[in-house]
Image (cartoon, one colour):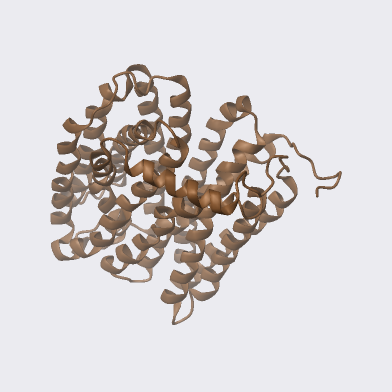
Length: 443
């Protein structure tokens, strides 16, 4: 029971921005910061890509346990509890980095963070729907997306720059990264305390599903069955799995390529410079590309834009091939190349999100969209696992040539995709597109 001091409503400005900043940061820590950290600790590209790609698994299987978040406890409880667990995971990484068994220990803590973060995603998005009415939900779509993007810039940019600064001033890599993770742990302790007192108590957030657990499980089975019985399911899943095939491999080696010495084909950047180029300039370009993609799709629909967007997500990968060929000394050219590739990725990703929304239409569309996102994560996980080994066999130059070849399946499947010509123009759909593109920076 809530006491009289527990408010069912609080000004959304006091909690929506911080909630979605807290949602974005652990994903970036698991998917991107881990790659850079392990690279600085001297792990091979094969090991880095394999280990960190496995961390996608919680997001792959997230649709399986998401119904049970409705049954067990309130979404408010899940949010606060997961933020505390994420903070504990970050602290665990910070404590174990200087130890001889850092690899096994940090991977275990990254797994804890990954499952906690995926669960936090489920609870936060559900809480957003319960705590705000429809007009507020529409108003704060852009706000939540903006703060998710800011979390990405903070994680991939500011925190990497900070770690690089610590490396330069202390000349101690384990200590430098330990300090960085301690700062993140402190931030999540602050989120936990803040949200413990600031999040409202929506009346509908009861922690009890409308149906019994057995009924929920039955409905869960029916939802999955109806999804795999959809017309064109094989073609749709093929599209979801291959549309980002090249990018799934490229993203795992982007930071290692920037950091590796020039003698072995890399660009030899310092940690902080890589954080500026990829984590700041790149994320800003990616966000702009996504926004422009959403605006243009709203005018003429997905069917009109699917080819330009497919080309945008594939052809700019050549920027890395050019960087590998010329290995420019100018940091400006590195930034321009990364910005061009990330802008194309953001623009092209709009078609991907729109297609999943389109394919999810009908009964159970929310659950079906969640299943689509699971396959989306699988499409990043599987190619990413092999990317490091492929690069080490081929070298960077030939690897980026291979990446360009890997864009061909994306283009081959486009002619077979059937889409209603007006899809993507509706106002309601575009709000969802804008919201989901906030998560675009979750590579």
